[in-house]
Length: 137
Image 1 (cartoon, rainbow, N blue to C red):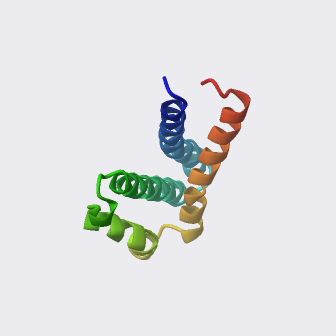
Image 2 (cartoon, rainbow, N blue to C red):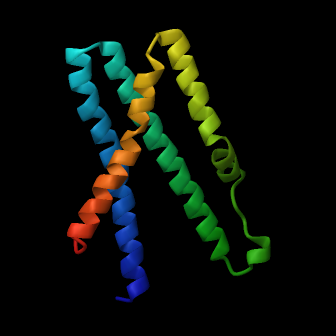
């Protein structure tokens, strides 16, 4: 197997692990907070983690579409779906709008959703450290 394919496979595995771990960390953090402190705070952490997962997913889809477009035979006329540009340009705005609506109508604390958004960063750190100590996995 060529080295480029091995690296691509490693990156795809890491992306998949980050995606799954983001949601898992959100659930693991939300449950004790909901039980011990407040169900609204637990829901906020869970919603924030879900938004972080959605943001990561949209980013990955956009990058995959751009990579596929640059690999086409005629890069001058490469076809990138318009939804890719929309998701790239508006993903933070859509997440902010979602957070606002949930805050306004469900009375979920904004800080709890912001803490839930940190699940993506935590998942990325965990997978990065894991890749450093166990590069063969």
